[in-house]
Amino acid sequence: MNETRPPIVTILGHVDHGKTTLLDFIRKSSVAAKEHGGITQHIGAYQITHNSKLITFIDTPGHAAFEKMRSRGANVADIAVLVVAVDDGIMPQTTEAIKHIQGANVSVIAVVNKMDLPGIDTKVSLLKIKKQLSDHKINLEEYGGDVPLIPLSAKTGEGVDKLLEMILLVSEMHELKGDSSLSAAGVVIEANLDKFKGSVATILIRNGTLKKGDQVMLGGVKGKVRGLFDFNGKAVDSAGPSTPVEVLGLEGVPAVGAVLGELPEVKEAEVIQSLVDRLKAGDTKTLKVIIKADKQGSLEAIEASLLKFNEEKKVINFIFSGTGDIGEENIKLASTVGAIVIGFNVKVATNATKLAENEHVLIRTYNIIYELLEDVEEVVNTLLEVGQLEEVFGKANIIAEFPHGKGEKIAGCRMIEGIIAKGQKIRVMREGVLVGETKLKSLKKVKEEVNKVEKGNDCGMLFDPIVDFAIGDVVESFRVI
Ligand code: GDP
Image (cartoon, rainbow, N blue to C red; front, side, top):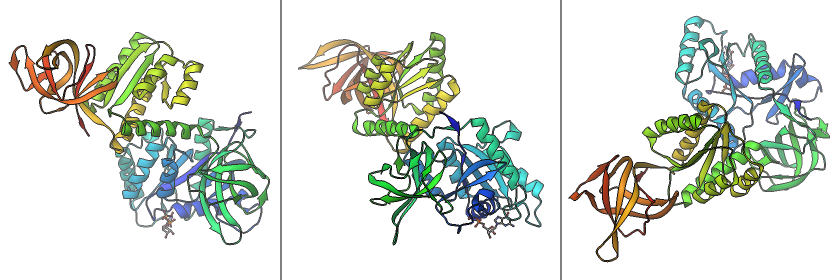
């Protein structure tokens, strides 16, 4: 029962670039907004009809709200309209908006506003803005990218029709689907305590239907839906996919961004969050990956690309890679060592999906290497942001052990990556799990004491404090980033 649902649009940009004016113009000139003739009220979102198709606009411009929702993992909008005033160009909050957009996995439409302003060489200004956008990795259609750019005036309304058409076109391309037979899933976009009505929350329904009488739970606040009102203030009995609706009957005031029901991306955000928590609590702070691919050839290609990416940041730790579908054993290993599982052109066995859900293991599968790399980069950046990563300088395999002194033993090592030097933090790992953290008391190449060893060298390492290592363990030198 998958039906097409209206696109949910948010408008972002620098202060005074015309977001409110644009939202007002669209609302005032639309049929749907006027059809009930009620008093215009503001509930945080509204819907319009254009060419007989519905569009939902979130009308709380402001990055803080957008970011709040995103931080809870909820991508509320399908399309972000990025507004830039023609006389001003890209300003600090435009850059901030671009950052949010790029992290949020939404489609972008760029708008150059205030085209009616007199005394502006619009040709020159437009060209300048296009260049600025390109510099910020907004890939405009006319330069071969996928972001349309629409010059308009929110004041006179000239060009606004083109924007609405573009919104419909973009949403058609993405085939946005909803299923109104499901129970509701959505996000709180506004909430407050009203003197007369009590707790009032606007929920943007993302999927399913919310009905009067439904029991709901919103980020710890529960309630029974006593009243539902659409954006015109009209009482309704239910609200389906992409509809904003005011809800009465909650026992408290939920937070903006609180989630109703299960949104798939929220689940994923929870998994990433648990990965971050794990890293915080855990012994090692590298991004551990397990890679499964359909063929040896693709596996090598992925590893090579990830190694290249890793050359600079040195934060990825390859735990295991192999060909074939993702199975339970991969999830078990991932869970033990706190790794993510990346699949390329492979399927995930049903029991593996279940186990991953229980164990909070992140599985991502791809058909395009580029997308895989982009996502890994994103996860790495998230982890870097929360300061949970380390740089690994060098790695060595322990291939032999020799007794030494009282209770001590020397690890006979073969360097497999980078450099290990005296003074660096050292740790010994067994199948991705920490055996012990230590320092080098002595480092010998053949018989000569040295300060560092490089890839390809064999050496003897003496640890202080003592680590109970075994042959097959890996020695890593690292620093906290
Ligand atoms: P916001 O802070 O992005 O919401 O910007 P506003 O919508 O409040 O607009 C800031 C100022 O720019 C107001 O004085 C608007 O009247 C003016 N403005 C917005 N859009 C246009 C436009 O298309 N043309 C002109 N000339 N002025 C505009």
